Length: 348
Image 1 (tube, one colour):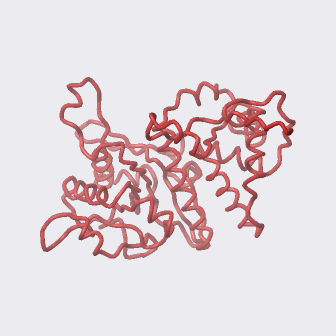
Image 2: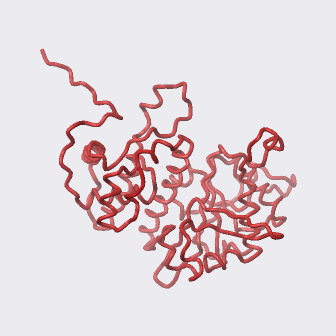
Image 3: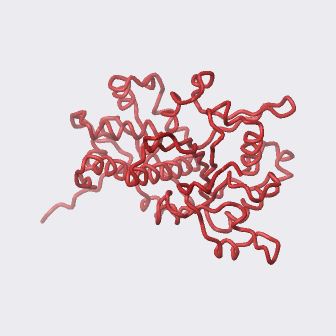
């Protein structure tokens, strides 16, 4: 009679751990986690496959990557975290989610030695334990966006410059920033906004517009609840982001912080209904319904067609001229645009 194999617990490390050989693939995984903070196993495989395509190599084996991640987890190079949970009462849903990974202490030490990143002084075990499910969900969404852009830019022969890699291109006075924070002063009060991601693409002849990304999962309200302050907390809302970006455009703060006024705010939001609501907010706040500074799409379009396809909607595309209001019907009747289209400028 054969003895059934005992299934290994996902969050239980095997001791003693196997010896880890620091290969190029190991370094790619650690660098990806350092760059994005959290990645699911699916995203790690996507990142490795993008690298494979660059060198005309076949896709990676999911089974081999899974085993490598298990060895890295046992050796404390990576950490497994409880990924986004939308319904805490549905315990079985936790087991169906892809495993989510973060950098662990030994991985930080490795990158400090090979890449000279000053991250090994942090307590990564404590840092990973303090992160909540909503933050992980948001971070994974941003990583999905960047990975989609990375894959699409490779296919179009473009170079993607991602976030902190943009620092050398910034004006000299802004190069000491660690967060690429946008700042604008209105009536003596300073307002700041840290983009979820700042990207740029280059075709060899020069950089294209800066792409400011915001991932709007739907958890953040579109407008401030008037009763929020009475309940004793400051409520964040997406209308604040729209207002700050618009004021920054008006005050030439993009030029001061990032060296260019050619900027687009790309927001990935949950649904077409959300696109309509955010378009209405843009028109209300900017009083410029024809602006193409703000562009919107949904995750379904992003992952189905890619970020460089015609998947983006400017606010005016959601406006129904017959009914004089914003509607999903008008959005569906409109033709979305591509950010590669030179006529879709953000300066209008």
